[in-house]
Image (cartoon, rainbow, N blue to C red; front, side, top):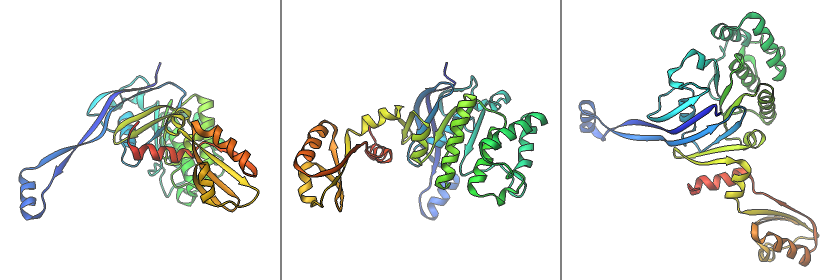
Length: 326
């Protein structure tokens, strides 16, 4: 039984067309004409309880618009959507108790007050008793390494600590479904790792379903076995992350260290040379040619070390978006 179901989900926005100049302004004032901008077009997918799914796409692809339809913030132009058994845009209390939306560029905590005061407000909104509040705050603050930080004004917390406190506030009511829009945006590497580990633990402990958007591919590779890819409002791919690499990266990278430096011109006989630096070189080789190229390198040149790797995920996805096809 799927906990998130989207069927032919679409969203269009009317945008007024205005001609330049004074005459265009007068015409625009008395008689406006519009064109339709299709932000999301016929997107369909299902997510089962407990899954962590990555939602990928370039800026303006329709990710945030889709999340807003799934959380009921905006009404779809057409199509059907159900989340945790509810129609989101009805915004029923029972639905809001089951979901949360975290946006890395937005905050809900009151800037000049300690985070704990905002948590007390959230507890009152969700009808959480004092005993449950302290139990949940204690558990989540331990998982997030926030002990002693919640009594400080939010403005005095570091960016990483503020993001963790935002997560705590968003999860205080223990939602079944987490919609996370760039939760590690702007954080340093250590803070990103900490947030990822918390999300993994939270998913394992409570079986929460997570739909995660991020421009940091490390977030996706660390947490998501399945990914959805959207481009220009259209769903391009729905499947495993490994399947994405196999489908869109039909080549491998060979990293070689030689006994002595070799010119780039000589190395071109073995494959497409990505870069050469001193005694090290990197080749891009079609998968079906991999065995032959490796054999030639080992037999014809003095090789100290050789490693075969898949291309970086960022590179593969960038190529997919640039091509705009599946």
